[in-house]
Image 1: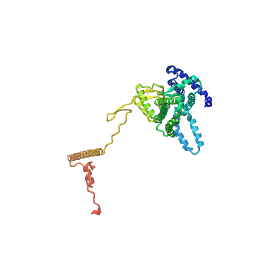
Image 2 (image 1 turned 135 degrees about the vertical axis):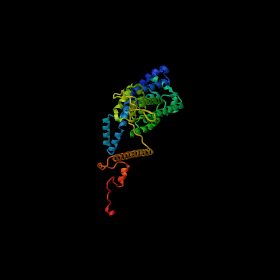
Image 3 (image 1 turned 60 degrees about the vertical axis):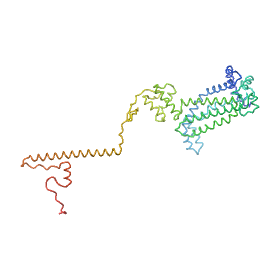
Image 4 (image 1 turned 90 degrees about the horizontal axis):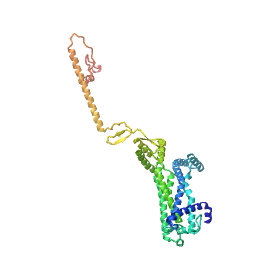
Length: 436
C-alpha cells in the first residue's frame, strides 16, 4: 500500500495540502480536533474539485445529448452491418467524426474525479493506520484521529472490528449506524439523480437502446455504491455523499434552465418562458435568447412543445427573431365562436352547418311547393292571355283575313292537349289503316 501511495504521491500530496489549508480555517472556528473542522475540510475539497470540473460537466451534457441524437443512425448501422463487426466499427467511428461527438465525453467528470477520490482514500487510510502521508505530519495525524462525526471516527469503516474501532476512541455501534445511514443516503441520492435524468430530461419521442442502458444503470449504480460503501472510511463516505448531492443539485439546475429538446423538462421550461416573454415583451437573459434562437433555426423540424411556444407568442402579438430576441408584430384578429368563447387568430371562412335528414326533407318539400306555386301562377297567366286574345279576335270584322296559325300556349292546358294527340286547329290526324 505504501508503494502504491508513493507512486501516486503527485496527487496525494496536493489533496492533503488542500485539506490541511481548509482545516486551518475551520479549526479556528470549531476547534482543530473536532469532527466539524475535518469534515467541513473534506466537504470544501469536494466543492473545490467540482467547481474546477464544471467545464467537463458541460461537455458531458453536450456529449450525452449528441449521443441521444445519434442513436437512430447508430441503430441503422448496427442493423446494416450486423454480420460485419469491423465494418460496423468503422462506420460508427465515421459517424462520430462527422458529428463531432466523442462517446468518452460523457464519462469525463467521473474519470476526472477518480484520482482525487483515490488520493483522499489513501490520506484517510494513512490516518487510520497512524502513518503520515503528504503534508499531514504527526500533530495533524493525532488531531485527525481524535475527530469524530456523530460519534464515528473519520478513518473507521463499517467492516472494522471492535478492537480497531476502540483504538480510534469510538464504539462499534456508533460506527455502524453512522456508516449505514451515510451509505443509504449515498445510494438514494445516486438513484434520484439518475431517475431525474431519465424521467424529466430525456426525449420521449425517440426510443433507443441508449435509454434502456441508462434505465439499467439507474438501478445498478446505487447497488454498487452500497456494496463498495461498506469498505469506505467515514471520511470517504462524506466525500462521496457530498459529491452526489452536488451532482443532484447541479443536474436539477441544468434540467430546469437548459432541458433536452422533446423532454418533459422542455415543456415546463417553455411554459415558464412563454409567461415571462409575454409579460415583459422581450427575452432578457442570454440563456433565453439561446433557446429561442435554436427554436427559430429548426423551422419545420420543431417538436410539439416548440410549436406551441411559437404559436403562443404569435397570439400575444410577438414574433421570435433569428437572433433569439422577440419583437412586436401585428396582433391577430379576435374572433368569437357561436358558443360565446373568444378566440384569437386569423379570420376563418365560415363553413355551412350540416343539416339533419328532417331538415333536408323539409327543405326539399318547401322547394317543391314553391315550384308548384310558380307553375300555377304561370298557368293562370297563360289562361288570362288566351282569354284576352280571343276577345280581341271577336272584335275584328268578319271579312278580315284569317290570322296565321298560332303555336299552342304554354301552361297546363297546352300540355294536356298535346298529350291527348289533338291539334289546336285544322283537321284531325287520320287513324292508322290497320285500325280501320
